[in-house]
Image: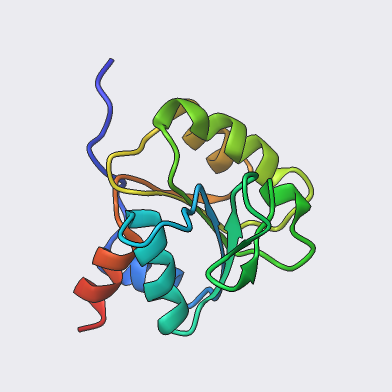
Amino acid sequence: MSERKTDNFSDKEIREIYKLKNIAIVGVSPTEGKPSNYVSKYLIEKGYNVTPINPNYSEILDRKAYGNVSEVPDSIDIVDIFRRSEDVSKVVEDSIGNREIKVIWMQKGIYNKEAEKVATEKGIKVVYNRCMLEEHKRLFK
């Protein structure tokens, strides 16, 4: 089964995605130096409203953490996923239940074809195998 290396969004389309400000980060770690931690910090520093999703902690980066995206009472535009590819479908199913999610973003090295299909069928953009920090730095130098 051949899978695309990354999505087909243009730089212009990715720039548009960054106009969305409410980001739930699934799998964020409280441990300094871990990618999910420093990407979250970077996005917070750039003015994004980051909501940590990790069932093992009640607070990460001085923000209330939730066990699942579906538990977050606030609006979420982007679900940024730091989980193994095989865990992504469960995250997507939970995320798109009763919400107006606009983008599912699978971090670098992560891709799940079934999750992409489910999300795109609901009209949700799916970005994959890209790092939100790297793409932001590249596009907004």
